[in-house]
Length: 77
Image 1 (spheres, rainbow, N blue to C red):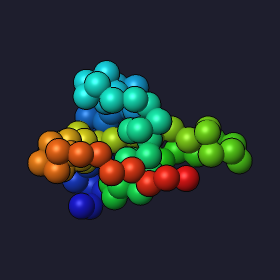
Image 2: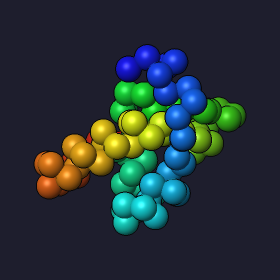
Image 3: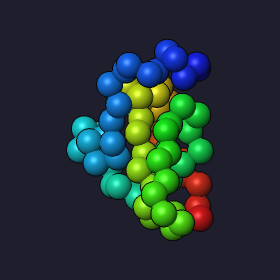
């Protein structure tokens, strides 16, 4: 997916997707951490100051994958 194709799409934050999908913040963060196309804006040196911005097409891809799989697989830190 090219950056240009997602530049002017609606972007979602973790809190918005949590509310829409009914999943927890930490669960969704673990799903998004290595997902291609997710913008990670790091403020400061610490990991917990990272803001995730998820283009609508990436959110749709993740949602479809989770709906088809029937389960959520997350990376354990």
